[in-house]
Length: 167
Ligand SMILES: [Zn+2]
Image: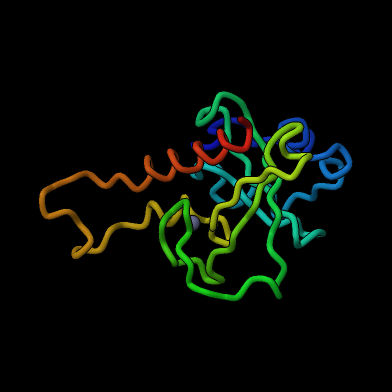
């Protein structure tokens, strides 16, 4: 769903950043392995920079938003963040093994440079797309036959986040 055909390479990802400085973009490291497992089934990709643990990235593809978009996120320091079962704002679960953390994205352009930022709690493994696809247990299913809207709801929330960063 993310990129159905082409998994972007590092150069394409760097060009797609909307809220990062040139020097930070240049120093972005891809996770290993790349592409991430199941990348073609994910609504967005996310990872913590293997060489800079206070930086993470969220990437969303052109079939979800109008163009490939990369967003730099600030990861809170280990001391600032207490490990708590805070609900992820994207998949709305508390299932991530290491919980969720408040990831903060500077907004694009001059607003971001003057300190304006957007934050959401996100699963620290960014596997929200997989969590939204875990089959519902019988007691979670709608008694009235309402469809399972977890995936479209996740896409809507992540798209809204990207729009706020870019706006
Ligand atoms: Zn999540």
